[in-house]
Every structure is written in structure tokens, then in C-alpha cells.
Length: 306
Image 1 (cartoon, rainbow, N blue to C red):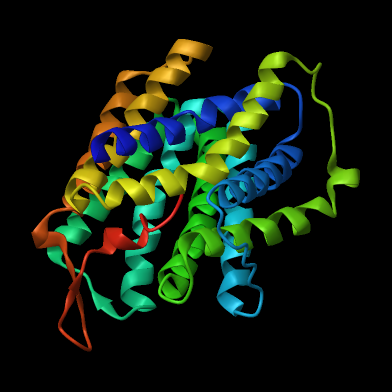
Image 2: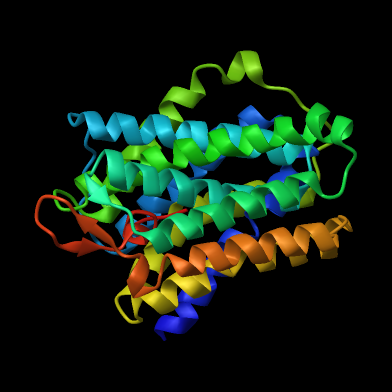
């Protein structure tokens, strides 16, 4: 059952880029961001209501606001990058996120990186470069693809702030209350510019409306499924299977949009999949400098939704 839940959450995450792409044919990226938050909150409240839990909204901790700011940056840049580029390029967020979380582990949580963890980061960086380059002439790469790489790097940086807030607050409140609070404030804040930012980029269709609804469902529910999966399977298995969403994303992008998945893209994906998998090995565990205890850096990335 745990593996099935893990595969379900992985599949949900793998569909995000093609759903954002479908929604971008009708709406601008900013409005898509707002709807992802707003619908995610609605689905979360429905889940809490069905579960007969009490709704608890928090706002006093500064880390709630740091988490909300990070998640807004994450979605704003992710949605923009997918809207103007290929859907498969969203996979660049994963290795960038791994790099940022390792840095946060070392400089914020005072943990010590190992040689293997730095090798993993080097592989992730190499994979990002190969995918972004994609065999293009240097002038064309610097003109647009380098720009997109920076867009997804900013998205990953925002996501890392969200995950840091999860790490700090998870012992003080439940994952549901934590994310419901963060997504609620995100939806309220992003509501304000909507009347000025709203742009209809094309005719509304059943596909675009369905895509937006599913994005809200994934935003609100996927982390709950993932949390339940972690209770039933080992973290190593969760880390490895979770990272296969990259491969699914590539497949969906090719299947639905006929995007060019070249040998460069496949090679770069393989490089950072190896790098991310290395962080799951015992030799890549990060030691706490103050207590000499070991904590897997990947725990920071997987305590909540993607």
C-alpha cells in the first residue's frame, strides 16, 4: 500500500508541468499561480472537513511567512518558465532544489557535508548544464536557455525556503495545519494583483479548465498522500521512487506536446538522477556539527509537498 501511495504522489507531481502548459494556453502565469494556491486551499479544507479535523490557521510565526514567500516565488517562476519554455524544462527545479537544500543544511542548520554529497551536487550541476545546453550553439544558449535556467533556479530557491520552514515548524504543528496556513496566506497575497495582472492568453477550453482544477488538487492533496506513504516505506525507497517523477515528466511532455526529448536531455536527466540518488546513500549523510548526529539532507526536501 505504501508503494502505491508513493507512486500516486510521484505521478501527481510529474503531471504539473504539462498541466501548467495546458492552463497557459488560456491564462497568464500569474493567474495560474493564484488559482493553484486558491484551489489548493479549497481542496485542503475539504480534506480537513471530511476527516472531521479542526481547522487551525497560524500566522504568528515568522517562518510561516518565510514559507509563504518561498512558495510564492517557487510557483511564480515555475509557472512562468513552463509557460514560455518547454514543459519538460520544469525538471531543472529538482537538481537546483537539491543544491540549495544542501547549502541550507550546512549554513543554516550547521550540518557538515560529506565528500559524497558534494560529488552528488557536482553531478546535479552537470545535469542542469547539459539539459539547458541541449546541443545548441553558444549564442542561442546564452540568449534564451540560460535565461530559462535562471528562472527555474529562482523557483527552486523559493521552494527551498518553503521546505526550510517545514523543517523548522513541523515539530510544532501538524503538516496539514502548516501547509494550510502557508497556502492560505499565499492565496490571499496573490489575490491582490490579480485584477491588474490578469490576461487571457487564449480561448478557454475544457482542457484548460480541467488542468487548473487538477493543479489545485495536486497542490492541496499530494503532500498528504506522500506523508502517508513515508509511514509505510523506507526513506531510501521513497527518495529513489520520488525522483522518478523526472522521467515521467519527460515522457508526458513528449507524449502530449511532442516536445523534443533529445539525447542531451536524457543524458543530463541521468546525471542529476544519479546525483540525487547518491544523497540517499549512507555515505552521503550529513553530520550535525554540534551533536555529531547524522541527518539525511534529503529529509529537508520530503517532509511536505513538492
